[in-house]
Image (cartoon, rainbow, N blue to C red; front, side, top):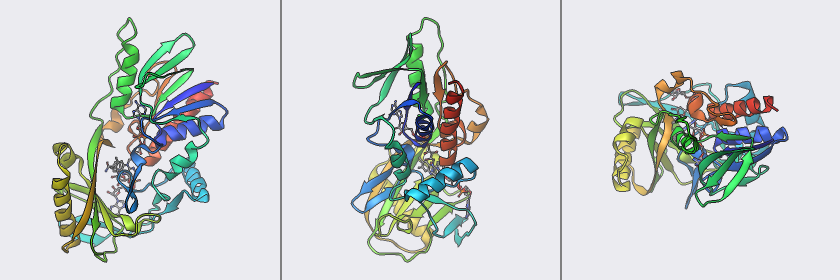
Length: 331
Ligand code: FAD
Ligand code: NAI
């Protein structure tokens, strides 16, 4: 059975790995240079820094087993730094029993490790999905044609999935336009500040609670194993702030992030470098869980991704694994 998996984020990797392990002929595609998606860490002059997913938890036994395998391979490790919270102007330690994991040396490391065994086309944006007599054919932005495949898994955000599904519908005589809610994933601005001198603060992660005007999360990157040793802090801006500042300049974000961090940790800071990244499709809208979207909109075409199950790494992994099981059940 020939299967194409479009999108090499954690959902696509989990789907492709399960199919490959079961003996299917799998081809993995991504528009980026390597696997990772929203788990991609940026390589900077100070080493890897995590701009997207910050850590993951594992509650489902199947995902726990996968995490244990990654740990054995040395591509994932526990993140043991202390958790704090900032609520109504107060920063306080907020210890808990939750086990949190990170990729080593980068968040995308477990995905890269799993993708090694799977034939893949990176730097390859798929722009057209067409049904042919023996299955589905894919065309890339560069005009390369792939397939036919008996099954195609779209493990990409809803806006991109809708575009591909409707590129197919456009070639049909009947109107089979599929609409996926475009606002399902909200944006998130991320800013990392590299400091001139250490603050000496113990916090690893800070959950920003309540009605803070712009932030949702802060982490000290050098509290993570395998990351840069220079003291640097990552700030995630809230969906509301990010949506209303989509075109913000790096200078504005750097100043705003510096003011927020200084206010929260309660001391002045001096920033030597700021690196910003805008995620257009970051975080699932709270109401999305009730939408009950079909994961099989056309025969042989499947949808996977965090947005089908709830926006966390674990849910994305489970979504991809679930689609693999459904395809294998048809064998
Ligand atoms: P993605 O990772 O988005 O993968 C989709 C892939 O498809 C991408 O690689 C993209 O390049 C590719 N693609 C898209 N269109 C095409 C096309 N036409 N052709 C080819 N390739 C295409 N989760 C947690 O559990 N813990 C956290 O701390 C956490 N923090 C987060 C912070 C931020 C800022 C963000 C953005 C996300 C965070 N998440 C967190 C959520 C987590 O990162 C996601 O739930 C998960 O990574 C989504 O995986 P996915 O495979 O569904 O999608
Ligand atoms: P988790 O269990 O650590 O956190 C879930 C939520 O519980 C947190 O958002 C926080 O509100 C609360 N919480 C947990 N531990 C806490 C503590 N010690 N003190 C105070 N509050 C605490 O991890 P889980 O369930 O795996 O969630 C993943 C994380 O990813 C969440 O924090 C979520 O907000 C974040 N995320 C961020 C996105 C973005 O775009 N910025 C996108 C998707 C997920």
